[in-house]
Length: 90
Length: 167
Image 1 (cartoon, rainbow over the protein chains, first blue to last red):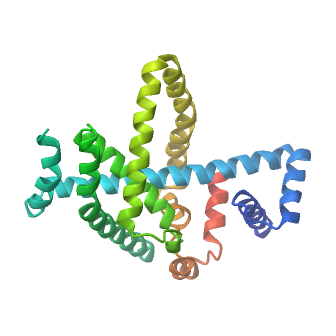
Image 2 (tube, rainbow over the protein chains, first blue to last red):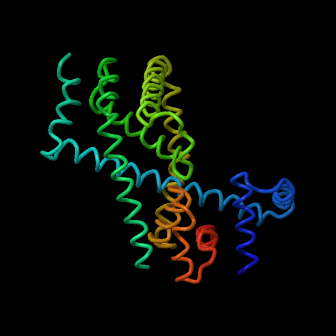
Image 3 (tube, each protein chain N blue to C red):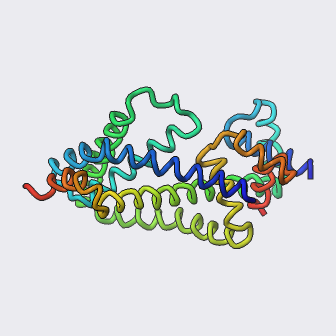
């Protein structure tokens, strides 16, 4: 388990550009000679992409919920009118 | 798991307050800017929301990244996004084929990511993905996770979870 986690940590630092130069060279060299390791690096990169993609979608939903509150709730009526007036008077 | 729920709920509430405040302070100006250039309410909303996401991704984990006032910074992104959108629209009129190719490209890059998410949520569990998102996307300080890590004996929870996703 410890070895696996060290490997994940090493790959993470490499992908995030935080690894020591020597460590990065080891990662790149190992990828060339060990295709299963190369596959692990690629899959870990995908995992970060997926997390980011998930985070951004979640954020989009949250921002949209704020938008809906501002344009439907009575207490925000003044704000809504202030914005909407730009789109009615042409 | 209770601490995890508190941690995530607390962070979500803070984001909601932040966006409410930014919306109230900045959206009227952004809407005015876009309306004056012939944009619709829907377009103003889309551009503004993209700008908020860009701002959030810039400041999370590194509040010093933006030295100007948030409103000024967000308006800068809004103007940039609007001019880019306008530029793209002109290009699309001239190069219909190019636009279509771009759309296909987008499908090719987004498709697998969405597919991956569905698959990972099923295998790793949504809670796992939520915690990873809080750590890697929202960049919540590591100290916030310390309590979780002690209670679950997972000293290196992020690495462990990432390795679970990797499979």
